[in-house]
Image (tube, rainbow, N blue to C red):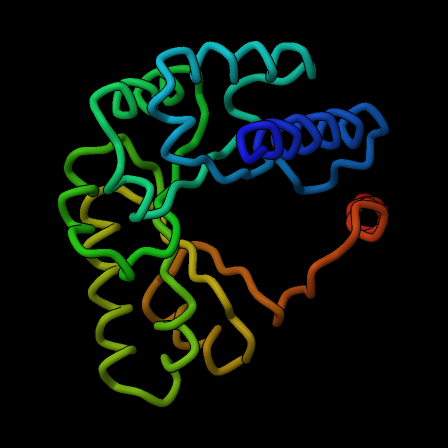
Length: 196
């Protein structure tokens, strides 16, 4: 059932973005992000199927971000690398999720066509009071920027964490400090409020 569920989540996300766009309530939201599994990436026709889903929703590649974890990349093959390259050619943004929790992350930065990486929350939660975590995050951000990759920090829950990430030049953050999880209608209301 997992492939069917993954497809449903993707279709729902794309349909919702298209609906928000057509209602004029889009605010500052320019794309939607979904996770992709190793099985999907290994499918030779994954990129073409995803392109068709985007077209069906009236969207383009630059409207979508896909995120893959280091664990997923461990299971990938040449067809997965080809799928990522095809998606990137469509304008789909590709991110490496949970960076720092895998075993050979630096290899991925050389091998895969990535646009950004997300620093795992396990580092972020200790950034304000643990010198080692702070040093690791600083090094990750410096390395990513040297490779022309943007950086997203996950799990930001305090102003102290946000301030530390700003000092290191982190590009984007996500976490409870900015917003708890929202329903579709709550998020739509927030987009509408930003537009006003």
